[in-house]
Length: 104
Image (cartoon, rainbow, N blue to C red; front, top):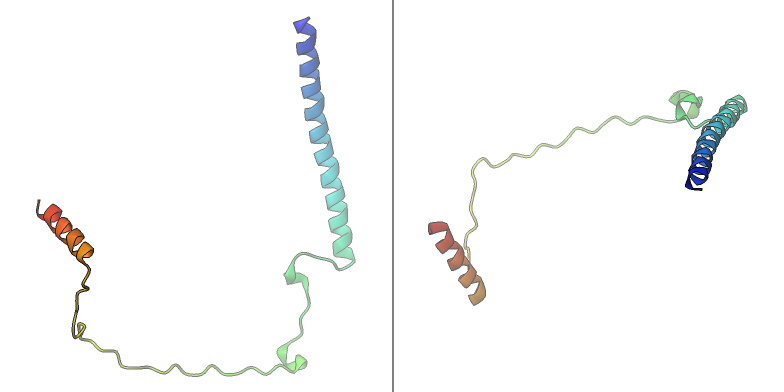
């Protein structure tokens, strides 16, 4: 009895595989035909096939790029005038712990 079930399962798997391959090829055929007809009637996914006239004939004026303003950069590094520590006791605790671990 199990032999018949195994034969049926294998045959169904083979039929499903054949149908998937056959339907893919039919789908690709329809895709090719619709793509061809789309190109014939002017519908295209590619932007490179559109015709654009020159800017002069469209009345578009090009502007010249403006020169970049240059500023002098400071070569020396100036640290902050005052570095006040916060009055956070918990932060001091963690800083001390980190220093001890670093020494340790």
